[in-house]
Amino acid sequence: MARKIKQDEVKAGAPEWMNTYGDMVTLLLCFFVLLFSMSSVDVAKFKALVSVFNTNVGFLEGGTSLTEGSLIASGVSQLSELDIFFVNIAETALSVEKQEAVEEYKEKEEQERMEQAETIAEELQEGLIESNIADDVVITYNSQYILLSLKGAVLFDSGKAVIRNDAIDLVDKLGKLLKSYEEYTIAVEGHTDNVPMNTLQFPSNRHLSSGRAISVVEYFIAKNGFEDKNLSAVGYGEFRPVVSNDTAEGRAQNRRVEIKIKNTLLSKIGD
Image (cartoon, rainbow, N blue to C red; front, side, top):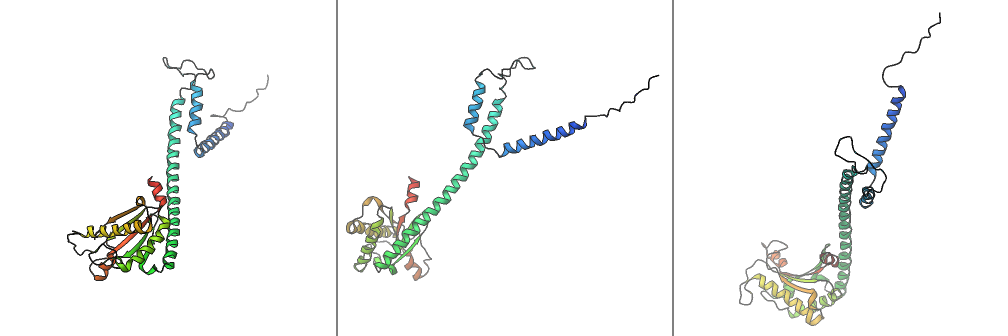
């Protein structure tokens, strides 16, 4: 009687090599998902690729689907939703990049404006010192403009808008100094304290401050050869004090004439 050979028992479940294969496929899937998440999509190129498939060039031709009445449309109709998905991702990425670029541009522009304002302020300060009028003019600046402030009592008598005779030399030297910057927009602003003004010529402090600003502008035009187009005069009256009007010293500081040289970079943005 032939001897019966005992066969190995078949283990239940999938073969052991399937587990290794499954792990490898999972790792590959994670790897490609990671690559995709770090990649950027060129919307134009992707749309061009999809349009090639959608023109039915003859490859990947499909037939009917498993359910009657629906076609696979040359095997690539499912790309329409994928197209929308990629476009949404790309638009989101572009929006973030655009916002970052705008913020970076603003920071760079702000720095450039500050550097330009600082350069002009230093040049003006040197000119004031050389002209011996540095004690009568205070210069400050920011990214928007360079500000020259003059005490109103130095230029005008109380309640008057005519430049004092002993202040003509100061205004003339200042005008000659500012002539180098006449291509900039220059605004002359008049300010007063809060003591009421009510005369036939100046019914209010606003009228008085406007008259003083106009007097300075007209002097620059008539005596220093400025053109009208880049000069302006405005009066703010008592409504923009730099300190409290509660003391005589404070009221004296608020009675002033300010000259603003507006930053050209800022003007270009407005244009």
